[in-house]
Image (tube, rainbow, N blue to C red):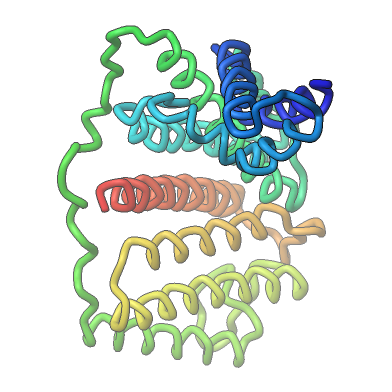
Length: 308
């Protein structure tokens, strides 16, 4: 006789918390039986089915019993995003190092970063963020369910009030310098087919790299210049940290392309080892600074959204 009722309770169960689920289902069952007897005077399969149809959808019924039950305490909701951002920043830096050094990293017990090639890091990072967010959520869930009077540390880097200083307003004069610089670099590239030279000799410029590599890296440099100008132009209409975050992200992608040049770089003629070492060191420094700028913007944007 209660087959329909048991099936209904089984549909409600998945929407309820594990802790106390059995007691809640018993209470719902008791209410339905009492309501059936009160409304129809007799408990039978037909009357039970009528009561169940009027009682509500399983999810709506479960929601009535979830009031006051917190998966994660509201006190810790800001910690969820800030802790996730900090964990992801460290995860991303290690991912970038694994990509650059063509190696893998194991940081017990949190991270394992495999050796990444080509664009694999771009697909790995979103998965890493989901993992970091889930790990922090799990810890905060356990803390909430324990119901202990626990005060989690709040990084001093983040203030609990305010949205931080907005980016400085863009000005016309720096934009003109950017446009002038881009124009000069573009003219130089069109006339010489490269932006990388062994020596500075305007009468007889000599390329540092082979023609294929020269075109590839010159296009990347021009693209970075264009991203910088594009972001600056957009900020005249919408000046925000989000624009700077997108700009830094695009710069990182272009730097990633530089690190993953698909061919062997052939130097045009004998080049001093000091020049090669300086170029590699400069690229590493540029990548590190771009990464730091990206994660700084990411944290600021996250903090701004939390504050709002």
